[in-house]
Image (cartoon, rainbow, N blue to C red):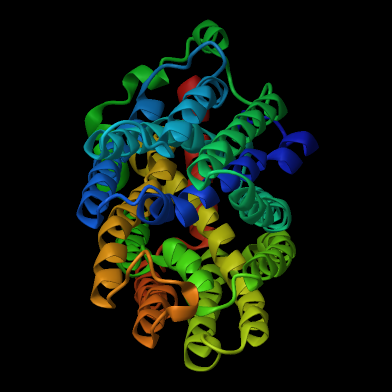
Length: 466
């Protein structure tokens, strides 16, 4: 028997609003943290690589721990997932502001930046994973998971519109009116505080969707106490569909790790910077509409096929831009980027639904609700990519003789080619490999199989209650 409450319009439409706030923080981190350390703070390359690698390596290893804690710990006062959405955002804000600081001697400043990025990622992961897991709390079936994944992707894409129209142009204006090192500290403060506000809106929107600590205790729900370490291990390593996604995503991360930083350098040293806000705005608008309809793509073609279609279109777009438009035709490049955004929106949104299907498989296999661990495991490839970014970017820039003091107009063709390789060709290779792995490895978990598993889970729980 399924005791889930019906999905309310408020929860459905506002699910993902915290990802709207998260995107502003993520853009500042992904596009400008390496830039801040290299070009603004002017830390040594070796020190930057070490600080970035240590911070993200430790964070990558800690990701399963964060997700396991959410799965295994008993619900707090405000609910199992909603408690973290309520309590952790202020910690995220404080630590993120300190990531963009240059306090004291160079060695101490590097240590502080790296440490605070580790703290930021830890506290933010607890919040982000809890919010992501609410998809399984709110949804009753695969179709509702597709709908919620679509809403989440829509909010994320909509953030790109505001970012490109309001945030990015103001970075340039602020750089002209105040010391550049304070510009990024201010942006870190504003974006992280906004993220906290959107988390609290999400907390309000999902009120009543899960049992509070007191309600769980009154209902005699001891399920969380029964989840053991072997249960958590089984939910991952005896979950072939999940392992397929993780292996493909990790391999892809090796090739895509440098994209965010390469984008910043691309518009500084290869293409005129004035096209950067234009490209972000155009792709964000297209992505918002595409994300809204990505749920339709998942329901029509199946979640896996929608992801594969999206990945194929993304690869083709990167190849076309790399061959024809990367250096001298910004308008054509932006047009192709908009087409690519349609495909990538289908891929990103429906990938969340695939993880939701893996949650059903894990519960069917183990009989335990380890959804937070399964959903949270998708952060592992992301963190591995961020770790590799701290190594790949300095290595490639060193190979093409990058000098932070060089004027954009004096950039060599060698430097431009290195940036385009990071931005276009490596992601095309990584996404191709990911698509092949997903095509052959995820065939065992189609929609009919997921629905049958969910039915069996409901029957088991009904029998247990009886």
